[in-house]
Length: 423
Image (tube, rainbow, N blue to C red):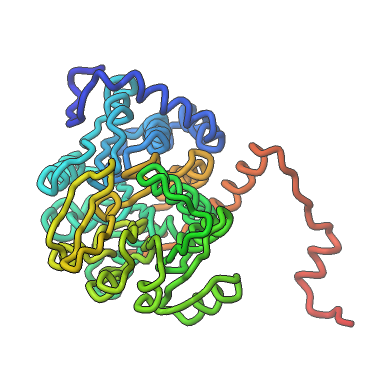
């Protein structure tokens, strides 16, 4: 480890286990590995300072390694106080010479001190998961915003915040909505969140899905993924929605759809995945059955109104089981809150499987390269990922899975481009 690397991580004795975890994840990230190999030869990010506010996991570590291979000077900080894998963070510093400012369980003050450290790196490109880093560049670190070429946003909640900033005329630099890329949300959000959320809930509670009524709040791609997985494990799945089209889709996908006020009276397990706040509120807690379990898999912990739950309770028993807090209401009903209302798939489990993050982070890496080569194309706005990147990632992933697909014949190409032929 270079003594010159500034960092704030938990315990360097954890590094050997972290390195094993990073390399194990790398085995299941062939697309990112192929990009890293090319980056090491071509150095498309040579000399560029890059700061990433992401979940510090083994998969993120391999993205950081890829950016570094491309010549970037990389600094990482956490995008959630409870999502850092401390062994991975220490290994990144010790074994890969990448600066990390992240400790699992850090308080709010330390969390923002770490984001400030990432900004003090004077990045020209940023990566975000929830837009906290970008938000700091627009509030408390405005003087640092001028040098940003572009920022890549990884999650639905962050894109919502950034589009709001753009609509209000507050956005100061271009942002790429990586979350909206098909190679991200169709797979990462749906399959990654679906599987890892179930994983986190079961690790925290030893909950049997079969026969239980599982309430999924929100039927976006993350909600779809969880609903699919829960049903596959035998649960009776109820979906709550505010969007009529998504509610209709959930109904036609075979799920019960009802308002949260009604679902609260019958549910055994409640999971929020909306990107909004106060989805489960005081009136819902009052209506819940004794021993209802409540969890969140949306980015921020505001989806569950925890202050309201505290106000309704006469007693709080911390850690009745790892990552489980028991709230005893004034009528003696018990409600179990998982992971302090933070991302349960990262708080109690390991986050998304590496295979699905392979596509998300491959898209991130290629987008960073594209931004450097095409700076003049990006106005101050929220932009989509170019289709050429989407196609490249998809083809590389298919190749890694030994899957071949058909090609259009010249006749088919001509037919699709013409309007002359009919019945």
